[in-house]
Length: 219
Image (cartoon, rainbow, N blue to C red; front, side):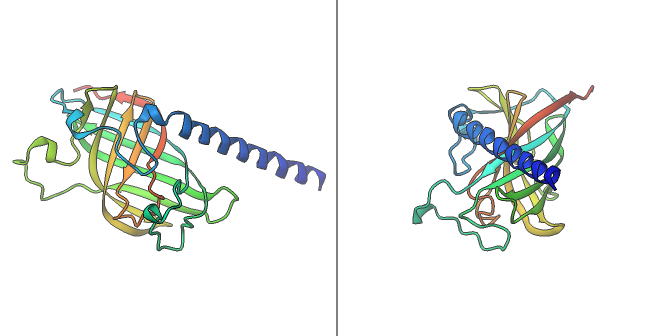
């Protein structure tokens, strides 16, 4: 009994430490990322350069973030309507992601992560899956095409825009959701999910994570 009690205390301390570290990360790095609490994209459209370098790579990493509604005013109150999110709670997200790019074009993007309240309640699971646009015209301007890699002029970041399907506990919940994914300084990933299409399930926040590896593909 004593061992079990001590183990519970240690687990709680680890959880609290994890939450504090992520909160420091969220607040302290906010200026660096150039993103507010409400899911604004990392870069402005005028700041983007669409590459012609035929870059090919595979990247993998983890999801490490805390979500909570940071402004309680009526103007920014979340419109959450599903049973899995409480807009007054804080959530820890943890999981994995992978991206494959071939000649500046996204070929694969998937993320699996757990979403749970900081008190251990409300646990559920999400899968984000890249959904290619099969009928998109190749005549579109490159900046209007989805899944094309871009770089930022002002900082060492790259990314892409695409549509994804989002599953909750293995069931498709939101289809064709626009998302912007930014890779910052080859160390951090930011996923900015369209609020309206996902019913603000992620509380108007982008999802942050770590880039663990980037492997160049030889052409």
